[in-house]
Image (tube, rainbow, N blue to C red; front, top):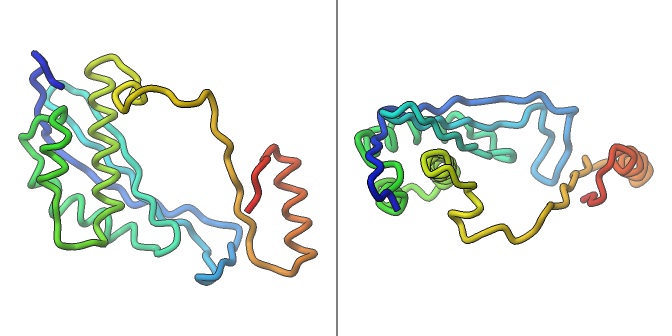
Length: 163
């Protein structure tokens, strides 16, 4: 994929993010915050790629960020970020729980590739398959009447898919 481009990964950073929730209830419990992580992969040419660690339900964004910084940073520093499959192989781990961290780094590598090649990432992945997507909104578990009220509110906000 890289042709004549010569890029090298110089650093990888993972930043835990905690977003306050409105007090969301699910079958897994009540959540006061949503836990994420932002991954930044930096290159020697100043191109940065961004990825997201999504750990919405298990609250383990700090653990996922640690996987990035303690395991993947060392494995990928100095590597060509456009050699995505090689980088993915270097992130192989016996820890099944590292998949959100690995996915975020992969997103960031594709972001770098798209920027370096001046090409949308959807083109790198085989092309656009639709013009738009439907966003859904999950309802907090509550009484049927409360959930119906919340469903009406989110539909008024523009959501056409409610879970």
